Length: 206
Image (cartoon, rainbow, N blue to C red; front, top):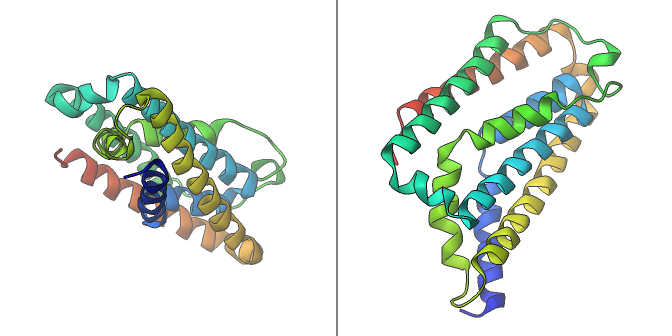
């Protein structure tokens, strides 16, 4: 395959991966609905920062350790499952009832950036995917580091476009979606999704 063919094939595969509903989609939708678009955008930036960290791990060989070491995979897997379960249980047991202006767009915070990034970094499935997926699209004889970060950048751009689309889609319904009952329902639903993903991750195999 030529370089152009590799890039087109990867872009197509990464687009399908991005559009597949998962934890990231649930996190962004819930955050945009309950806390506003700025917080949701921070969560999206955190998720994509996690992609770059996994890309660095793959480029410099750390991702290969996760792929071949059962112990390293399990440690990261259980840490990730525990983190997701903690987030989910907090939403299930302590759902919000209302929002103040400071909890939406008016108060900048790195909180959701960190949550988005940690949720991505502590998911070894992302590392396994990058280790097994990215090398297939790197032309023979090309720089592993340059191509890895280039391909991850394509994935990140697609992820940001999709995230912005999701965030934008929630805005026309913002007033309805921020009512007390809806906020509680969104928190509990997202919390349940997080707990299910935590269980799935904890019992998953490579």
